[in-house]
Length: 187
Image (cartoon, rainbow, N blue to C red; front, side):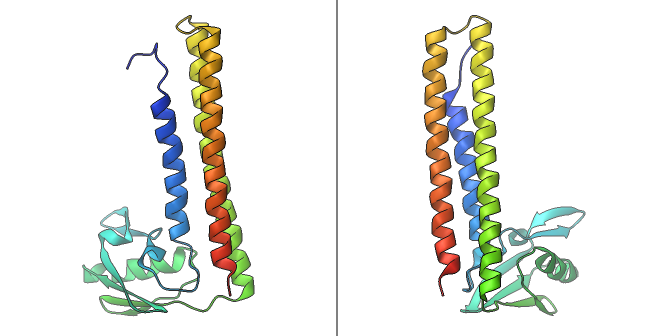
């Protein structure tokens, strides 16, 4: 693609990426039930770099309120334990050598509200990311029109398309937040 063309597919791909990141972050928010995706946001300091937990250990759900983390390399057990504690998930792992048990405590009302605020923060970050992609697209359109690679009418038409996509993706993020908030607040 040359600099004289507007790539709407790239704008759409980047906005979809922001929504996908939100989906991933929501998967890490716990709702009182154990699920392996709960530990997806955990990053472990291993071998001199930050790695996702699932690249250094196997996560399983032996019972409804317990996660089991089987660390592959015994020397990383301490780092995995520390990473789970520092992930701001409200979890306190119990280390037993290469096996780390992570009990899932019952959510009280205060913790539910806290989780809801975290979900709201994640949603706002997704909205900002979507708007940033929109801004980049609009700037590209302005440059194309200014450099006479695009007519004013084409600029307006593409700008409307970008705005419609932005509105659609922000609405999608808001719907995801409403569903997650409902899930968190359920008793």
